[in-house]
Image 1 (tube, rainbow, N blue to C red):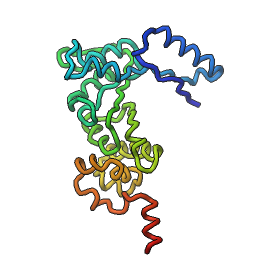
Image 2 (tube, rainbow, N blue to C red):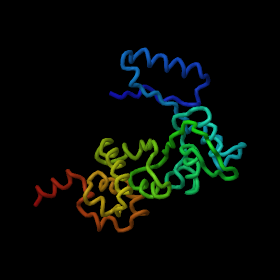
Image 3 (cartoon, one colour):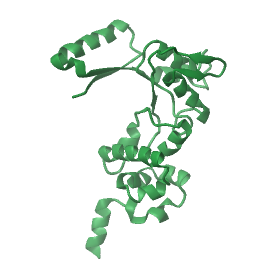
Image 4 (tube, rainbow, N blue to C red):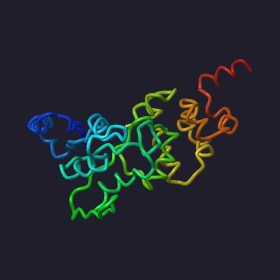
Length: 228
């Protein structure tokens, strides 16, 4: 058994509060405490206010990410690198590389971490199954925490189907498949096209003609068969 007890944030005022949460979790899980994962998440709310390119407040998201790793964060939001709704560009992948690798070239200095524990890149903000293949292609891997709430709950069939479509999106990219062709054999991913038609039209022109009935709701198919 593997348990995740809490997802706490740097925005908390006092570190004593975080310590109290950890003590509570250990006490609550008792004999299973050795199976507990207590995540310390660098939350996106504060960083977005401080590091937005349109708000010059003294340091960048890149600097914040390095600070988070130094402070021992399990993960930190690194933006969506131009593939979601957050500000950013493809070159922002360097932020993710800096916190996950033991050595990395920064914008000015070459950083060596000398074995310091890595921090996991977290992505969120307008991401869904249709945007992920391009995102993974730009980043070069899929070792991220994907908190795509809208990408799951915005799926027309169910949040569970949305979550499956996100996983299928990663499998599509990893296999090097064409997303529209991949969707023909993976229904949840296909339904993501219907769930996010604006993104589908922009990223995959002509998808309706190529997917056809695959992207149609199951109840609509049943209704059609009854009418026939």
